[in-house]
Amino acid sequence: MRIDFIDPFLEATEEIIREVLNVEPKRGEMELNEQETIPDIGVFLGLTGQASGRMLINFDKNLALKIIEVMNGEPHALESEMGQATIGELGNMITGRAVTKLYEKGFHFNLTPPSVIVGNNVRVSTLGIETLSVPYHISYGNLEINISIKENV
Amino acid sequence: MRIIEEHINKKQPEGLKPDGTPYNVLIIDDSMFIVKQLSQILASESYNVIDTATDGEEGVRKYKELYPKVDLVTLDITMPKKDGLQVLKEIMEFDKDAKIVIISAIGKQDFVKEALLLGAKNYIVKPLNREKVLERVKKVLI
Image (cartoon, rainbow over all chains, first blue to last red; front, side, top):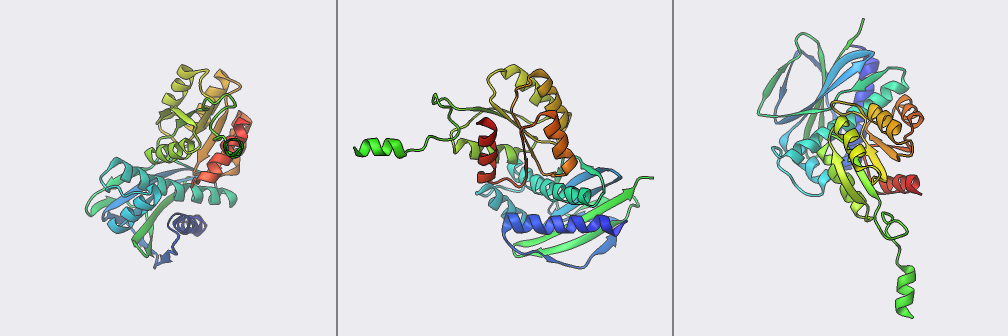
C-alpha cells in the first residue's frame, strides 16, 4: 500500500475530530493486519477510482455516545437510527475530507455511501488485502481507522 | 413611538419572502443526521422544508411532483441509486431555473467545477454550521 495514500486519511481524521469534538486526538502506533474487529460500532466506506479499497472506522462505545451527543445537541442510543446515522455521517466527513486531500495530491478517488455496523467484537476479514490500522486516543474514548487500498492495474 | 421603533428594528427572518410567505426547501440527502441538522438550521430562520428525499431517484421525482413550489434544493453528492451530480443534471434539464445548493463531504475541485457547470448555484463542504448554511442559502435566493 502506498504511504502517500495514507497521510490524507490520518490528517482528515485528526482535523474532523478537532472540528467536531474540539479535542486533540493522540495518534498511536500503526500496524498491518489481515483481520479486524469491531468492538462496539464501526463505519465502512468504500473507495473507488484510481485504486479501490475501503476504510473502516471503529469507535468504542463511550466515544461514539459522546460524538452522537455533541453532533445532535442531545443523546441518542448507539442502537437508534439517529445514533447510527450520526456515526455514519462522521465517517463520511472524515473520508470525504481524505478524498479531497488525495485529489489535491493528484490521486482520484470517489466514495460509496457509509454502512454502520453495531455489534460486540464483530470480526471482519479483509480476505488477504493488508489493512493499515491506526489507533487514536481521544479524551472521551478510543477510535481506530483501518485502511485497505489496492491499486488498480 | 416605542412600538414603531420595535417594528423598525425587528429583522424579518431570512427564510421569508417579501410577502411574508416562507421559501420552500427540498432536502435531498441519504443521511438522517444531515436532514435533521439542515431542517433545524433552516427552520431557525423560518424557511419551510417542504419535503425530504433520501436517495437520488426520489429526489428527482419529488422535485417534479412539487414543481413549481420548490424555491431551493439542497443536494448531497454520495447517495444510493442515483448520485447527486446525475440528480443535478436531471433537475436542471427539467427546470433550467432551479436553485440548487450542493452539500457534500467531498470538496474536490473537479466535483465543485462540474457541479457549478451543470447549474448548481453554490457548494457547501461539510461539516455544516449554521452561519455557513444560512449565508450560502441567502446568497442563492437573493
